View 1 (cartoon, rainbow, N blue to C red):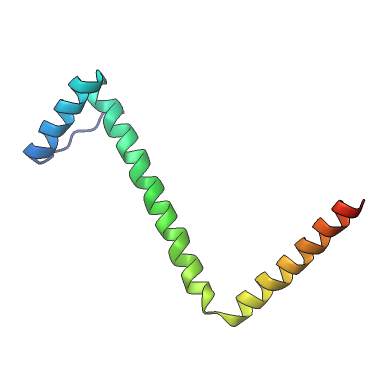
View 2: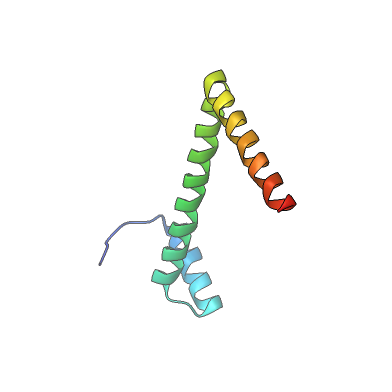
Length: 80
C-alpha cells in the first residue's frame, strides 16, 4: 500500500539521517516506529482498563476468587 503524507521538516531530516546511518529504507524505519507506537498505545489502554476496574469491588472479588482457584490447581499439580 502506498501512503502520501506531510511531515515536519525536522522529522524528515531525522528520518533521512537514521536511514543513512543504519542503511535502512525510510519505509522500514517508519513501519517499525508505527509498530512501536501502536504497541505503547495498546499497553496504555490495558493499564487504563485495569485502573478502571481496580476501583470496582465486584470485579476485584471475582479476580481474587479466580486467583484462589488457580492457586489450588497449582497446589494439586505440585503434590501429584
